[in-house]
Image (cartoon, rainbow, N blue to C red):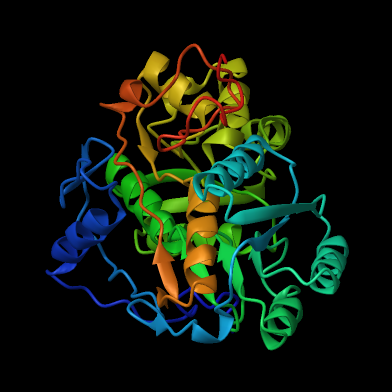
Length: 380
């Protein structure tokens, strides 16, 4: 059963192919910031890749264009951000990016923000309330991959375009998915770990929130890669809700239970810092040969200071900035892609010091150029 529309079906047969490196090079080119560097097809995170055993899947709506003429209207536009909730530092930074996006439209956009407090029923109610307020467009960070689909369909049926950001949903009735390719991140994390371990070792996988699209995609993809290596054993998969304290709490009994762990594959650097703290307190940092993370400043600072071997698969907070711009285009009646592929920076253990902000708090994330006036933690 497919749990996310952007995910390859479990049980699919992976084909070995000598063209994988070429496909990966094209993927990384598409993910890099305009004008930024591109990772080598044979390296990722500064380490030579192991011989891959999978073919990266194609996004189902890549190249599909949406005719938005039915949404066209005169400005100003009331654009709502129906957020999952400000429950972690990523979401706080993402909200700041939303405000930057609104400000960049120079008065064209009247914003509304709702906070679902990580509760599915509240988010459904938030969307119902927004529709009664006759908003022109909704940006949605979904609390659940399936439960929000009826709300998305309802909004679209009332002529309100919905822009799903970074967390995939199990329906395609939205106008646009601002896709940061969580599934591709999972594959890259899995291959990095397999490479660092030379195909042999014990791995702990750390997901975020069970049930949301981002966690499902990355965890499933990463595990599907590791299962291609007979010498690699996934000891357990834990869920740390993207928060450092939860990761530290969950990792302590894992360390007590398993005396031999060679890799910690976390889909989030923000929660990964908690796992790292638990490992450090246990005196076992030298045992871990591979870590994975993202552009959370907490994680980038740790890697920059300690030089541990970490892969970086960014989750851009700038997705909310792009969502505002794409919503305005749709309300202007301009064609937009069904899948908007969010650009990502190319970060490795070798260059992370250029992206980390050592004088900023751990709650900061790489912003992609957000002005200081919008950036939390920036000295105004």
